[in-house]
Image (tube, rainbow, N blue to C red; front, side, top):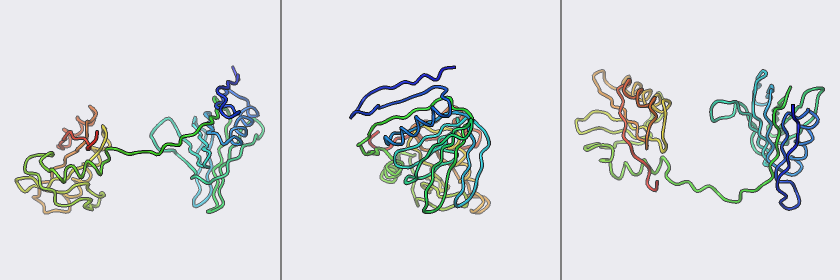
Length: 254
């Protein structure tokens, strides 16, 4: 088992990156504290439990997880699935680190409102601290709002005879992006996505269609159309299974 440390880069007299593989709790704690002192981005991966106390309380038993501590005070705990953290703290928190016997304990705390996130590592597979800067602001090009405006300006992009009647129309399942009717007077709901999408988007569209079918008169026909640049094979199969449709369209500028 190796616990060798790697150090790379020396911007402004401080190491840009420090990493350790299979560190002891003391070695990991030293790296984390050094990273926090340098206002670096600190990450840990290993076996840990997670406890939160604040507006509510939650506990996560032992599991392999990734913890990220950002210089602005944010803390994120990720598993190997999904894009969202399983637990998190917002910017403005104070991070701290200590050892407790054979465990590494990392805490993220804020006082307004009073809440804390405590992550206890029974083992750490990898620890790292990255010092850097990102002065650029994100310029978003080609949003779903752009896609919506493109359709409202030129409804024929969806199909000949399509007439938009409302946007963000509320249903029991949520707000429909674009609500309209086709040239035969049938209700059409559009779910818009700016990127390639999978089965989740199809499920969302299907819920809107079913909700409108319940709300409208019994013999009303509701067509659901997913509008996106492309869909996965699984999404295409699910569209066919649910009797939904797909139109390939991108926002302006993409």
